[in-house]
Every structure is written in structure tokens, then in C-alpha cells.
Image 1 (cartoon, helix red, strand yellow):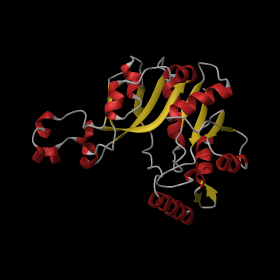
Image 2: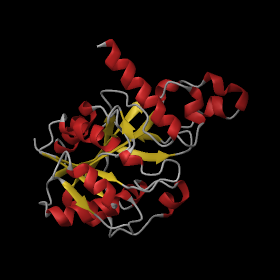
Image 3: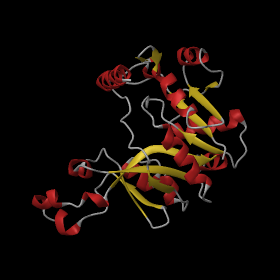
Image 4: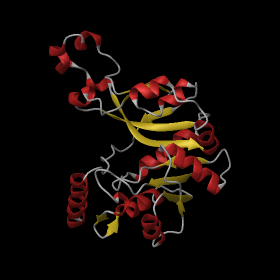
Length: 257
């Protein structure tokens, strides 16, 4: 199985300006993500940026870097431009990896690519078991339910499935059986041709209500394959505090090896 990884790397970030270039143990964050993606067995790993500083920094460790528009409204739009620039065949499997995940599990990249390759669906993603009732109730944690054939049925910021017997009474929330809940992990595999098709789909009222872009795919009748990630992912980097946590984790890991 061959697949290509694309890593969007936007320079601007309101909470952590210049995020892709943030130093982590002597390397820019984007290089950590790149190396993790390469370890997954991808035939090519391409970094797509919108800023010359990122382009120059990435060019030090790989020539597979592309300059893309600053005007894209979503990561998928940026991905579509990359498909055009690379002229990939429509059946090429493309894994979209976020550029702010320096602790990315390489195994999960390979897993989502294989999940798509073994199906006729245009898109695949992963989930992780929820182990905390607070996360079930947290609208920032996106929940997902799927069918017996590993097809995603719905993604929501709401607590789905709705445990009627316990959720009707807020006092009983602590009795929820969290074994029934999965949190969506934001890693996607696509067939290259579908990325081009996706940006032509009209936005759906569901995605606008939930602010979840993947609901456009389900709304228009396309399948999204999903299964539980082999390795529970670490959180990405959004803030200076997140960055400090990652640096501390990697320094402690290096010291123990």
C-alpha cells in the first residue's frame, strides 16, 4: 500500500504566532511532525505552507515543501491546492496530518491509510475511547458514533449517544457508561479525487450548526470509515503552555533512554 502524507503548516496563530517554527529540543515543531510521518512508511511527505519563513526552514530538511495561498478558509481547501500542484492520480491515498502534532503516533498514520485502502469509501478517520465523563459532556471534544461496518454515522459536539436513562437527570451524569463513547481524532485519509470533489460540495446546515467540516461529507451521502486508533494520540500544540508540556515530555523521555 502506498500513500502520501500532506502536512498543512500555517504560520499565523493567534495563540502561538509562528507555531510551525516553535523550537522543540533543537528542531522546529514542523520537523518533528515530518519525521513522525516519514516513519509511518509514506511514499512521500509534503509540507504545505503559506509563509516564506516556514518554507525556508522546511527546505533545510526536505525539498518536499509547497507554497500555498494565504486565502484558504479551511485545511481542506489548502489540501485541494496541493492535489493540483502535485497532480496526483484520483485514486492516490492522501493522509492529512496536522502540523501542530509533534507527538504524532506514526502507527496511526499508517492505520488510517490502511483503513481507507481496504474500503471503497472516499475518506477515513480515527477515534479514541473516552475515559472521562467530563469529556463526554465537553462540547470541545467531538464525539462520533459508527455502525457495525465501521461507517461513521454522525459527529457531534453533543454527548452522543444520548444515555436517556441517566442524562435526563443531570444528577445521574456520573452513572454514564463511558464505554459507549468515542472521541474523534482529527486525522484523515482521502482519495485524492475526492478532495477535489469535496470543495465543490455546498456547505451543509449541520456543519454550520456544529462547526464540524466533516459533516458536509455525510450530509451529501458519502461514507467516512472510522475505527479506534491503535495508539491514543497526544494533544496537539495550541498555546505556549502546550509547547512547554511537549518540550518537558520529550526531555524527560530522552533522559530516561
